[in-house]
Image (tube, rainbow, N blue to C red; front, top):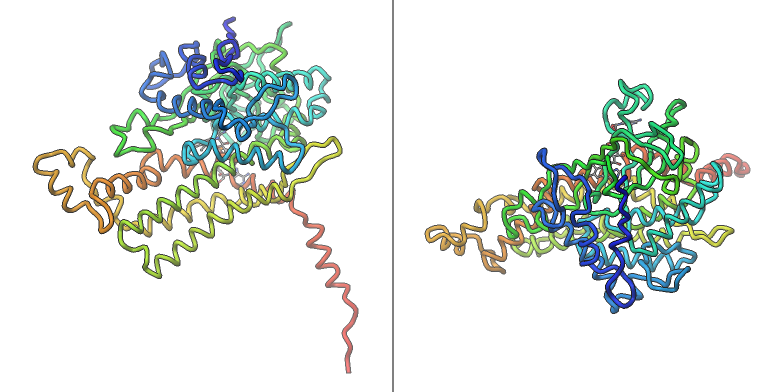
Length: 503
Ligand SMILES: Cc1cc2nc3c(=O)[nH]c(=O)nc-3n(C[C@H](O)[C@H](O)[C@H](O)COP(=O)(O)OP(=O)(O)OC[C@H]3O[C@@H](n4cnc5c(N)ncnc54)[C@H](O)[C@@H]3O)c2cc1C
């Protein structure tokens, strides 16, 4: 079995022992992962045109974290070795710890303008949550709790990158996994051996999977009696024999140049459909085994879901800041910035941006510390903003579309028109704005379109709608966590008011 550990090549080359961007790229280069594009196996994700810029973007995050100037921002001392390790792996025990994690997440998010969501700090948050409350896993036997803590420490000490696929494939949502036409369509256990288990089937949708060291395969969808084989939580190295990744259409490969596709060409994190074909998982990488209760409780009885989504909100707030910055520049270019009607629309956009930003901080302020000293971000605050994200985001995008008119469309077919002997002078003359050269205006409008209208931009709208689960599920989370008792107590008190004085 070829189960090369990514840790073997991730050992850092800098004095602090942190993983450099170069060490990260070397570790995922030709490591045996099986990524398929257009029916072909990708030989090297670090050089293939669909993935190389995404890989470089991830590598820059590692370089940022390894930079001594960012030591306090991006790292904290390992509780076991004292060496600096990624702050993403810190289990917060105070409000200040959570703030520090959020600042690190924002710094990484800013590196991609909030356009890469599943960077190495996202699923890291989930493993912090598991290691913080391993008792949830121990109900199956102490070995499972020990496995999850040991694996968390392995990730933390080696600065590793893990992504996840936790949703069954959308084959027939009308039936549970075990009643599908083939019970091995959904990823689940198909065999138990002395040394571990064998997993087969498919799972969606490992964003960033092309670039990560490990995949966490589990299930967040409600499982029914009979679905026990899918109630698992396992970590699999990306080069595990039998695992195949099918990324959706890679946008970087379609980006013909950096001016026309400034974002698609650089920040496509990819989303991968995962196929497991008899993948062997050793017991030490099995954290949940055929247990529907633990499979459910890992999300809701540990702080995992909140830690992961604090990172997601830091990333989203960063992206919204970039979005409103784009809108402001667009208005300046079109000469509409001082128009009072435009300012009203920008005021609405700013309100949406500020709500998300403020709610992110409120999760910290309203966080609580449990009797073991573990800090839990405030669930009702977190889920309140996540529940409305699928309405906030389209509204924000629509405001920018409204403000732009044809600004993002009344452009030539590509930046090459600036270089043609006939077309060049027309471009220089008519593409300009009152405040900027034609080339600068063109570059801004193409960036705005890449953000909103290209295939890359549109995938982002789907991402913001679904990355935290379908909105009806997030609203159910909100329902479960809102303090209705306090609200209804007021109503009851109002019903018990003493009689008013009557003449
Ligand atoms: C860009 C992108 C990136 C993603 N990245 C990841 C990732 O990194 N890891 C990962 O594991 N997953 C990821 N996901 C998958 C995501 O978690 C799922 O898409 C999400 O959980 C929704 O599941 P589904 O797509 O199967 O939709 P379904 O569950 O099939 O639901 C689709 C729609 O059907 C309707 N519907 C279905 N059931 C009900 C109901 N009971 N009540 C009301 N309405 C209902 C709703 O309108 C719902 O939005 C990503 C998704 C996208 C789009």
